Length: 252
Figure 1: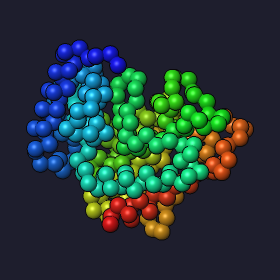
Figure 2: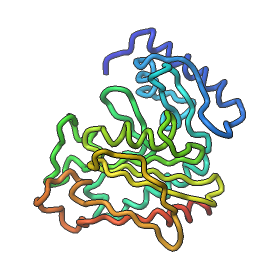
Figure 3: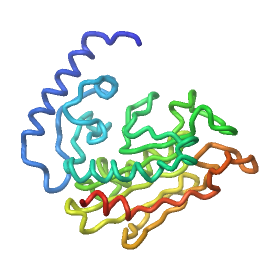
Figure 4: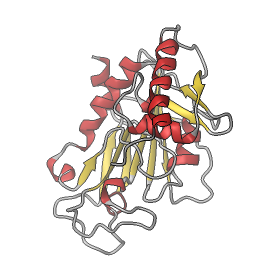
C-alpha cells in the first residue's frame, strides 16, 4: 500500500479528535450530528485507516457541504441486530458460496460502509464479475442498512437515500435491504429494494411481525450467476430470509 502523504495522515488525527468531541455530547433526538469539515480525499483516508473513534458505518460524508456527520447513535441495539441477522446466512450450503463482508467499505471512489454486505466467493462456480467490479473482494450483491436513530427518507444521512442513491447504483449490487426499529425493538419495519427496478422509487415500509417476516432473494442473482446457468449444489434457487427471528434474539 502506498504511504499516505503527511496532510492526509494529519487529517485522520483531526477527524478523530473532532469525533471525540462529538461523541461526548448527548445523542441527537433527531437528525444527524455534524463532526467537522473534510475533503473527499480526507474522508477516504480516514475510512481506509484502522483508527476510528466512531465506526465508519455510523458516519457519512456530505458531498454538498464537505462535512462528516454522525448518522447513527444507537450503538447497542444496532449492533445486537446486526450480529443476530448475520446468522441468517450461516447455513453451510449458503455460507460455502456466499461470503459475508460485514461493514466492509468499497475500495473505489468515495468510501461508503454498509452495516452488512454479502457477495459470491471467488470459488463460487459460475459467478461472473460484472462490469465495473475489478475483483471478487469488491463484488457485493446484497447491501444491508440497519437504522435505529436513522429515519426513513431521501435526505443525506437517511436510509432510503443511501439505498437508492448509493447502493442500488453501485456495480454488482442486486438487493438493498433496509431495516428500522425503535431502540427498545418495539416497532420494526423494513424495505427491500431491487436494484434492477427502473426507475427505483422510495418504497413504503412494511412491518416486521411475528411469527415470521420473510424476504426472498434470487439465488443466481446474489451469486452473480447468469440466468440458465446451474447453481452450486444445494444452494437454493430462492433464498428465504426471516427478519423477525433476529429481532427476537437481539431483544434478549
